Image: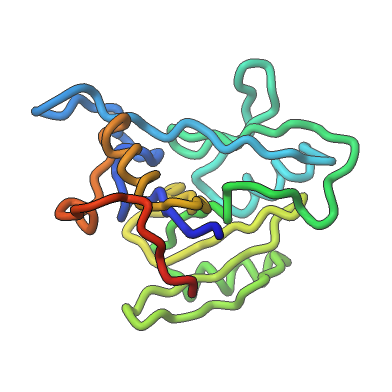
Length: 193
């Protein structure tokens, strides 16, 4: 059973495309920074246009000779494929997303621009607002309440999310307050929502 591990600003500033995220910490090696999400696309040009028209912090570019969209210091890299699997293939990536400093206004702006949402604007108990867009090629893209409009997270599925979190902490300098006091084996089973 796969569970969720979220690489986000909440989980770790160092693994996300955040200005200055490659800075050296005072007590150790440089923090890792999130570099890219690699997407299969039947039509990279259409996909790239979607991201650059939807998110004002993005621009079309190339990286290592491949079509890409840059968002701050992070990239979406597009691999042209003749046909996407149906339904979308098994992947560790649940979705990825950008922050919004004004969720209600951004949501209305995206709707007016013709963006299709799989999940309409929804409020969590914490007060955070989020919505899931249907992006080209079946990608699920979230926007959520944030203090930045930057690319801010990539939730991943994992059979052992606490072990995965421990690995990101050990090898990449990630910080996660909830596991700071964890004792015992990381393979503990988590309740399935």
